[in-house]
Length: 179
Length: 179
DNA sequence: TATTGTTATACTCTATAACTATA
DNA sequence: TATAGTTATAGAGTATAACAATA
Image (cartoon, protein in one colour):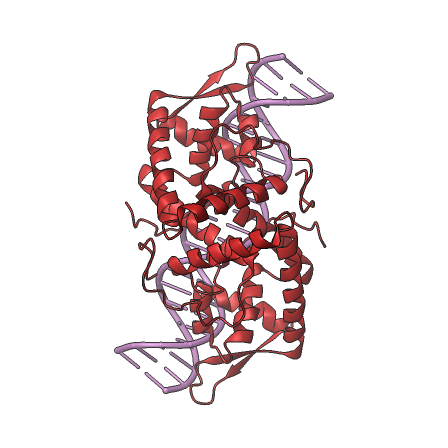
């Protein structure tokens, strides 16, 4: 409730300098990762986009003509969750659901021009977020971190672009800091 | 729903090799961090401990004679949440709440011998978890990753030992893989 | 009969705020 | 009157499973 808006805060309440027991790497990873995810969600808030919706837009842009089943799979979310995600995106004119002629059960998902525009904004936000989160690192360190994390993601079979958190909701009632 | 039990899975469904657009470092960080947190929660399940409870035990062990208000602060959780966390721990004889003589409003928290024993188990689990999560890295890389993450945690003022996820619940209905 | 998408129900969880007791 | 802890309530969000339509 104090430095909620600060990016690289200068006044932590309780520094970890004096910590006799150093935190485990896995804990730090989870801690920093979750913090970053929260900050990212806040950056997304002005666009009225959930992290999972941002992921959906990226997925749709990449793998053209996905149907909802496939999207759910790649997002690691249940189909009914994808429905509510897409209901919103479609209503706001960012995504279209088109019944396929071959198989009229399945919806081909595609971005509208507005959707593409939002995706572009999204990319900018991602870049800003990355830069802010890693600002204290040297270029070499950034590179090294990226390499290591890629290796870990691959080693653990984490599907490309699918956040475990996409399944969850993530939205504090009072996160209107940026808006 | 496929490689849920595998640690360093050998058969990812969708490798990230061919990914034309490399993931941002922040995304990878969140992705790997969340995955690790999930796995850790699973390791905790047999002990019937929530991640936040594990954090509470560690906090109580470290800062002796905390009261609930202080614990809530360090855990970045709301006081009422701490109550339910502790209700369980106390009922199971891992933690004691002792009314202070100086200020009878405040409860001095302490670990029982059973609580100490669980804490020891916890440390073992943490070590195992760390080793498993980082098994594909060289010693140099592990060191490098730890250093970088520590720097990031400090730069962003993340309080030592407090997970942003401690506020949330985290417990899928069907996570009885390990048990 | 199997599969895609949708809806609806039931459930879990969390925070807010009222409440009690101490100070 | 202010603070520590507790309780209760209300609100948000998810998954499960039933459903409708296609195949």
